[in-house]
Amino acid sequence: MLLVRNIRLPLACPDPDAEAAARALRTLHLPPHKAACGVAKLSVDARHGKPVLVYTMAVTLNDEGEESALAGASPCVCFTRAPQFAFPTGQVPLVHRPVVVGLGPAGLFAALLLARSGYRPLVLERGPDLDRRVRAVERFEREGILDENANIQFGEGGAGTFSDGKLTTRVGDPLCAFVTRAFLDHGAPQDIAWRQKPHVGTDLLRGIIRSIRGEIESLGGEVRFDTALTGLLSRDGILTGIETTAEAIPCEQVILAVGHSARDTFAMLHRTGLPLECKPFSVGFRAEHLQTEIDKSLYHEAAGHPALPPGEYQLSQHVDGGRCVYTFCMCPGGTVCAAASEAGGVVTNGMSLHARSGPNANAAVVVSVDGKDFDNDPAKAVAFQQRLEQAAYRAGGGGYLAPAETVGSFLAGQGRLDLGTVQPSYPRGVTPCDLGALLPGELSGALRQGLTAFGRKLAAYRAPDGVLTGLETRTSSPVRLLRDRETLQCTALAGLYPCGEGAGYAGGIMTAAVDGVRCAAALMAQNAPPAG
Image 1 (spheres, rainbow, N blue to C red):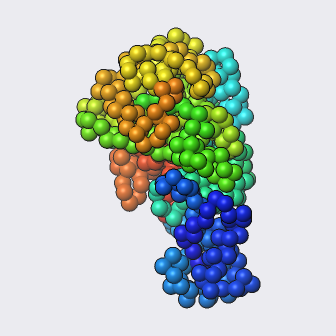
Image 2: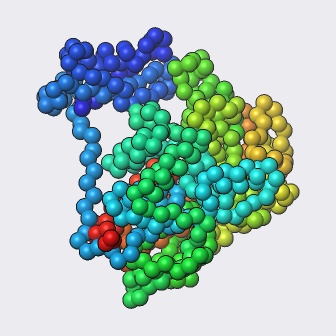
């Protein structure tokens, strides 16, 4: 396949896909009947105030053997082959089938590769299946009744299920193509293969997760819901089994993909003496603006053009004290979620449906913290998150209402919620609050500096009636369970594979899924499938 990059077209082009294909063929000096042409990537360049469409086209010749000779036709042309994946297996069969703990993106894709390779994995998920989980979340949003094992953090699909379904990543790992192919096989929109910032949407993602789980089960895998890991069994530094809320299970290989909110599991690992360390994470709040104002800030007079997607942004600013304030998990046309998983704590997150058609855009606005803030003690890092969430609950007045403040008030330290054009979307309701008082003074000051800087970069952030809803505390896991770089096994317990966000090795759906595939491949390289 040949890739022809940097084909730039104005928004006024009546059929941009066809024009991009024609330009790609002209660049290669090919007549249309000699090749097939399709979109490989599409992005919007709005940096200079007049947005243009930027295409990369994929061209496949009828005689593929001729493609490599055309790679030098232009500096924007390159020859590439679709990645082929081979996962070697060890020689000695496992005595017991491998266990995957957690059915978020990391665990789901680890189990998928194991199942496709004949290992018949046993998957344990502390929460319920997706249908029961959705009902529990909807009940929490309506009535404020929290199920600590069935919420936006726990249950089939993990925290990523209630998100934008973003597949964007800065990781250039070839395994990203494996993950994308699996999503497509199970019904994801075709454009995730070529959009610059692919997303599935919370509504479509649910069906895809059910379908992947169905493939795992059809290949001999087993999924047990409502089953949490409670302990590890070992002899001479080698894993021999696990304890769960249901029973003890003998096994010699476990992929630990519990997610970033499994605090009881972190505590168990700490008690067991496994090597945990603090990992950087961030805290702050959700910022909401009208999506139309975001579009105007990015696209200027072209805002509203049907060829343009809902505007997205990513902002960052280094502030006094060496910290970084940045936006995270931006959800165009989305809503702010009630993401608590422990009684008496308020947590916010964001999500969008596939259409991204809601009136508001939201993003986390957060400031970085790391081990130096917690004496490099993982338990103190987790306790810090908990204290913030409990303070947010009290400030909201109970019932999982969230504290909120308008941007102008926050910058002035007034503690007011002067609503204007932006109406808060947090489903449990909000309470006016001085958000700065809920955070340590250094962090509040950093966030004010960051927001002020964002206003210089994006006009929508200068609007005083933007709404801040708090607190956002679960940007990533606060801890990392150390693993060997080569075998990916825990440095202190052979047979245990720390995996994904919860173990501190991923951030987002795509990177977590890739880490799941990577850990499954490492397990397979050492072991043959169990006999029988």
